[in-house]
Image (cartoon, rainbow over all chains, first blue to last red; front, side):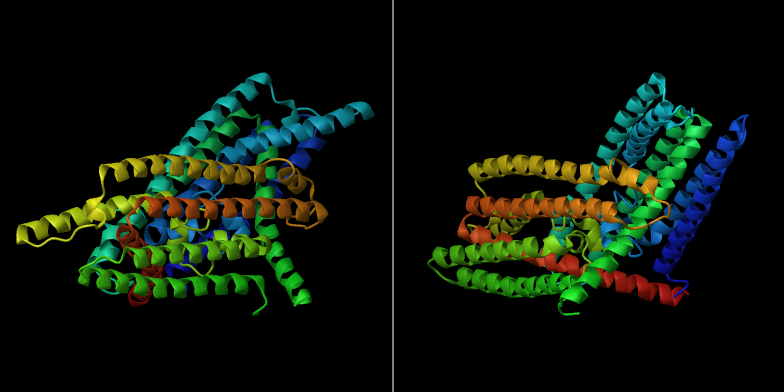
Length: 256
Length: 256
């Protein structure tokens, strides 16, 4: 089983999730250290953010390689819960979610700063201190990202629609037995999978380029803050999905 | 396990697939009988098409009931293969695929009629004989269906984006431990699932209304021809997915 494609894909994902736990811990430590230091340590924070991006690049490269053997394993991963898979867009999060997260965190920080102001304390340089210039850049990035997402969504839709068109629909119509396999079927399915692998690769590329551009707009401290929150959210979504399934199963057993 | 929600959903799907095999056999028989009769039997064909639509309505009603307990089981069905799930749009086929299938079948029939004409034989009243009035109505239906699909796709996208926004992203940020569950998490996840169930219900409603309108445009013979081809395609996609997985696994074992 270890050499099976599905197993390789699963192992790639599990390694990635372990790395996410490690990175979250490093990012949290860096933020704590930064808060307790009188002089800022921007350079270290910046290096940490770049390391996370580099890891993401490596993960995308590995997915791209593996996807050419089994793309559907990444688009509907069997190692994720159903709820998590419902939330996936082309095998991962929507890149526009990164920017939505920046906005949500910014709102949260502004609330916290108001409390601190009322209590006479203050922290600065967080996501609650985004400048109007940064907001403008995020709005431009958000528009651009959504347009790119729409193009990829349309490509996937077109691939799905193709099932009801030449050649697949016609092959099915002509078969003497339902589900029969022949070279025509194999060729049509291989072509579909190849196109899907291309779409997954582009979606990963869009996630990566959006993340890079976003981190480039933020200060090092804001970037580390954002990356920590993003990784925590991702890990939570994975865990919540599992616990939600367990809970539903448990609830059901009590009722039945 | 029989009372488990997942098991009920799976059983609902398996019954539906069995019914699809039965219906395909009935539709094929009716077409053979119709071809051998000198006088047409339009009324029986029409009743058969209506029976298939009624069964689809019953299936959609059952899905809608079950989805309120476990919507993700229908959106990413564990009983379908990965490839099949990649081809799904909101738990089923895209309604616009029905119209694409009519066009594909029409093209195929026109080719067949040309062969028959050259051989001096002829069959009429098939999907190769669509009138310009029928084509106009299909074009209108196709445009309307795609617009409705786009609205539902956008609703699902918005739900996916919400994960990176208030309240979910903020709940995750505030948790002391990754993946911790509390009443806030449960409430947010329940709300998400409720909205997803609503989207699935609307997608099923759109599939059904498109199918009804399409069958209304076709003559009874054309409708039975279309339904037979559609069901065969659906069953083929399911079987191909399974065989594709087996083949990949088999191939892998030989290599490793």
